[in-house]
Image (cartoon, rainbow, N blue to C red; front, side, top):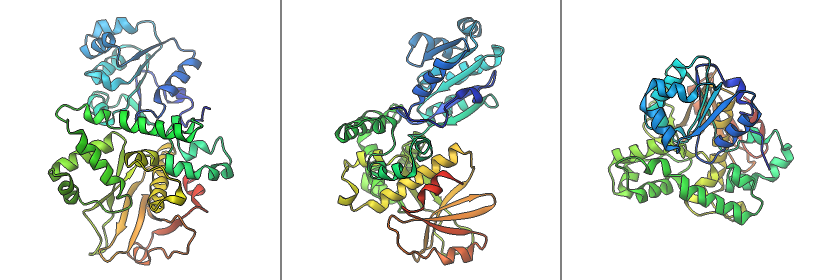
Length: 377
């Protein structure tokens, strides 16, 4: 079964002599979207992959005349997995600057790697799309609200990776998740020169998996892993740049007792989080349903903001005496607070937050109202 993707037609994002860069985690469907588009396009195109050693050497060489001859006669050049190509940014710059009217698409999975190689050379020469695992927003194009609610248990436990959702058998779904986690999750990070302590990275991710929704102490993580705080911060940065986790900082502007220096970390996919700790029990047999719910809604809201191009600053808010707001989005000149609650229980949003920020609002997101929160802004 094929699910609709938000970038269903790459045509509208293409401009001559600008590179369309598609980022995202591994296994979320970037190659599928690219090939689906190429199967429909009327452009004469060249498709190359980063693991084509001959082409990678050519594009990374900077040899202008040779590169121009290689793509001569094509309207479109599509490059898949470009993070494998040395000096790819300079090669893409040559294509954009010296081949008139050429359209270019480049996909890649390793955000930090591509950003270093592509970002500066292509300043002013690229459009960027970020593709995540399937989103609630995308699935709403295929399923009714009731049908989506019936799948909520699987979404929270098994996540939203395309190949997991398209697999029928639960055992096979879990096997797919474990394969993604074990074979792909840390591949980009562990490929870095000088980073060989794979066990430390895995152990760090496991610690984060148990701290969803809680403030994370760098010193405590460093002590538990027997490494320095700077090393922990480096690994956290790499995990975020490779689309495993997302950091949220604290909002602190008005009150003296607001938490300032701590951060929270969420996983971009619940299934990956559960695969890391090998926990696939149904919701009825779990004691972490609150964490699963908070992580799921946070990740889906992130996708909605990205796909609807809503640019917001994102925080959490907490005081030292325990008052808190799980998520604060700042957009359109206003603070929008959110409390995540799995159970439909009466909750008093943080009155102190509203007093400290008079133009703000706080609402509770639970199973009865989350669909509107994820689908509309």
